[in-house]
View 1: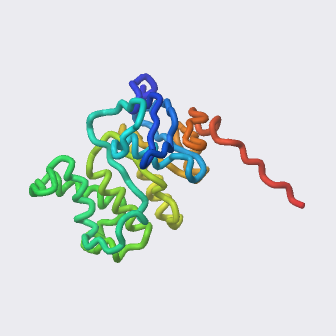
View 2: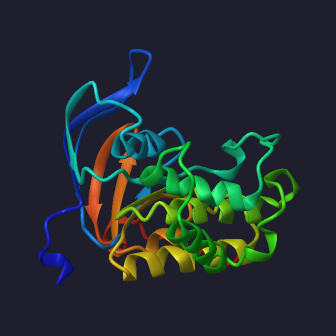
View 3: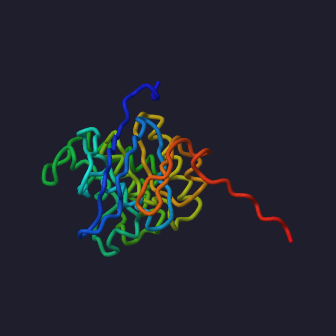
Length: 230
């Protein structure tokens, strides 16, 4: 059924970058609705820039992006969050409700219920009163993902969300990604992990800022032949 839906995102000849330097060059692609799309490529290939364009935080210098007017939820790497940020896990997740309530309005009973549910989904309800600075990298990343889920967006974007995390945290985040897609959310995540990319439904491969292939992960990703024993 999802295959017959309109794409969640369309990019047409998108060029984008920073301070006059182009990182993406004429990228044309579609991202299917209600599916998991992996963006792959070497470091510097433009994965994070493409996510920023889709999120609307980086404006293209050329081309066009079409997506739902509802704001996407973006999950950055936990290492990008200031280590001294003096807020609790519950306050972090509650920030996801700002998209609905604004930063200065009191949360409603429904807002608090959503926050509580997202804490439980990521297995961090027992950490709600602790500060982000007291958490491990995996716990902090789960808090950031819970904040994104609390936004209740139909488009979830993740930038190397499992990078540098222990196996339990990686599995928890991967499971949450699949659950979100099963609930109809479109998930786009940049990753350098081959196993993660193979678990996706759709794959975009970037090289030096250009889209070089798109399709199922099995077709797009190069075959890795095991080395022969010497």
